Image 1 (cartoon, rainbow, N blue to C red):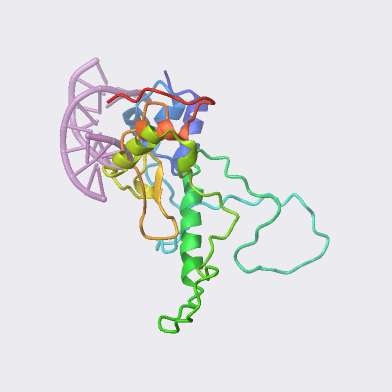
Image 2 (image 1 turned 90 degrees about the vertical axis):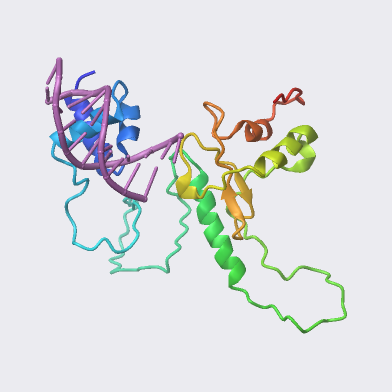
Length: 225
DNA sequence: CCCTGATTCGC
DNA sequence: GCGAATCAGG
């Protein structure tokens, strides 16, 4: 493979978008990450991004420009609505891992669960709890694919429980393409992490989690070790 | 161990 | 110019 204009262009684009050399190499194909890095240096764009002020203060991952298709005749100055502006037209992730959403959901739920501090430690109403005043997980974000015990082969489930004891307990940022992305625990609490064991080639999860994540229409057998 | 980018240097 | 090997780091 050679560095055609097209390939160089893609390289530049991806590099400036923050992709890693290996990711770019994978995308281009036919080259290694070393080749990409070498090219990057030769092109003199090591700086990744040169513009902007000196301090890299705030955490602005990447803000996709919002396609303002709708023309608003009203000369509205600067609305600046309160942060969350869930427009009907979702920006659509379009990306790969849905994990990001899970992480956000985690943060949001954690915050939501913390806010309503209506707890009274001593006021014991001699009344059995009829309902749970606890913060209910707000709907909206899909729950992580936790195994719904009643639908999964008990043997596989048992294996999963066993495997999870040896999970690497990775954080979101530690996940790679070859670490199991199965979420474990309650995202609303601190007891939350990702399995992190080696994935089954081509799958997002380790073998154990693949077995519960991808259920065939019929029941399954096997499970050798 | 997995990964990252940076550098070197024979080709 | 190219990129494998190597280095330095997380």
